[in-house]
Amino acid sequence: MRCVFRRVRLAALVFFACLVLAGPVQAVDLYQVSTIEALSAGLYEGKTTFADLARHGDFGLGTFVDLDGEMVALDGGFYQVKSDGSVHAARPEAKTPYADVVFFKGTRDLGAVDGLDLDGLKAALMAKLADPARYYVVRVDGTFSRLTARSVPAQPKPWPTLADAIKGQRLFPLEQVSGTLIGVYAPPSAPGLSPTGWHFHFLSKDRTRGGHVLAVSIAQAKARADNVEQVTVVFPDHPLPRQGVAGPAAGTE
Image (cartoon, rainbow, N blue to C red; front, top):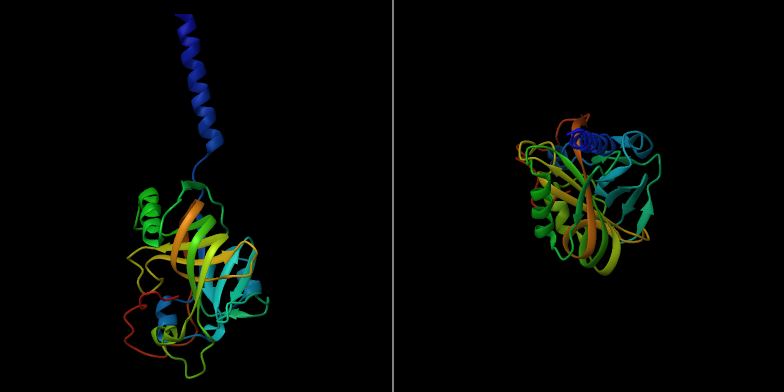
């Protein structure tokens, strides 16, 4: 009887030790510059410098003043994917009219996502994250057999709506490229605040290619995610340039 008790006690100690070592899933705070409603209406004025943005996150996505390219934040670096496909480090004094950043921890291991296309990836992530009513951020590292990215050229004033600006997008078809997908999920309850559903940008491992992701075919990759505990929004200083904007167009920033 004493031996059985010792075994039970040992098993209990091991169980609680595993709980302590594993720890709770740590959530992150999302910092957002402006709103997708303002960006969709054509408000491309710089709001926050990248030096200041770096104080709020090291991972995320967004754009630049005049909608001049796609922004990718990865491992503490901020990158601008221009409409000619070139990638440049963002200047600290440069500003963004729209961005989402977090200090990424990757506390949720979502495992392999091999062989999936973009729709399959979105479905697989939601099946593992489970709660469509909250924000998430995800990082997918691996090799992509095919990936279509895009960027948009700088827009002259008077600024067009985002839907009109995207008509001039430049597409970058990539094959057998290694790199990282940076993803932000926003719930259906935030249509004017953020692009609802999944929003992905890409940056290659060598930091020479990237953009807003339109299509993907994953060869081999692994995903990690964080729950978002809190969202802080820095609202634009000026009223929307156009009224009656219901929300972002499909495939927007």
